[in-house]
Image (cartoon, rainbow, N blue to C red; front, side):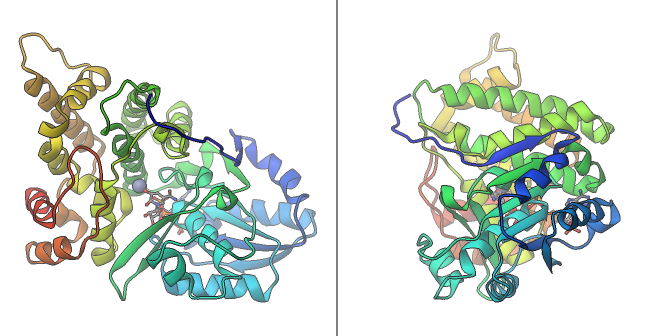
Length: 388
Ligand code: NZQ
Ligand code: ZN
């Protein structure tokens, strides 16, 4: 394990079917004004809204509602939420929802008192906040992003066709996160499996890099095996508590900074997936699944040893009388079979990309240096064509 690193995760996490009981204790720590952020109404249908309002009222909170956060939250919505937070002198932002709601809450927390345009400062220039940051807490209802225990906040600007994630520091992580697997039972199947693949992708983006012997890789192999096992159970029976609770916990650990420690990370699939979503507004996890097989086949020769290890350790491929390349390819075939079995988008057409959009998407993408191969725009165009 050769990297140098600091590890600190300040989020206090309450997990389990009675975890909402702790909300009242957390609320004691903050002043009276709460900006209650939620999405398009799922929490009203499943009763969680009523439960949260009851607890807020018991604590004599003044509730300012900020509803209608859309999947892939927009910069226009961010401006609205930031204005609301500042005008109401908010003491605590409480996000109740999925990754979009939690991401948006974090973006509002650093934008309310920002003296310039937060889009320019955080999403174009990637500067760190230099203003007061409002504390955020969350009650998570959809699993996948890891937003409940990290500093990520992804915002979409449809006008400039950009979907950008800023990974903020510890001061922006949620102060507390409440995770009750029962709340995820009402997530529609399409969103549920998209979330499952988001988790898998987070792990693979951090796994496929470097050549040294690193404990983080062993942790990730365990997380992937548990995810594969539980996802196959959950697609057949979404109310299997063991499966849903395991997946909720895996999602948190997949992106709460732990497994990236001591490693380079890739994030190319996310770079391509987010850029597709900037054009099509498609569901995050599905944009990732639609390009993953083509991407990993493309880079496999540059990281052959790791792809072989992935096949052996995660998919238990039988290596006898096979070359390293055959073993590695069989691992990717197992990945593809699992993806089809749980019902993911396997082609970019399924997430709204038409063939005549490919060159524009490839030419306008900005990719950081990644894992085993740094892609050119021409490579991206080839991968997108292979994903049709
Ligand atoms: O808006 P409501 O009505 O709540 O419905 C949502 C939404 O339509 C619904 N949903 C959520 N919980 C539900 C439910 N429906 C019924 N019952 C429930 N319990 O599911 C739909 C999708 O929700 P959303 O929050 O958009 O999904 P997800 O959690 O996948 O979040 C996606 C966003 O997170 C970003 C993505 O780019 C995308 O913008 N990401 C954030 C990351 C981070 N913070 O580190 C990393 C990820 O890679 C990702 O980029
Ligand atoms: Zn993701």
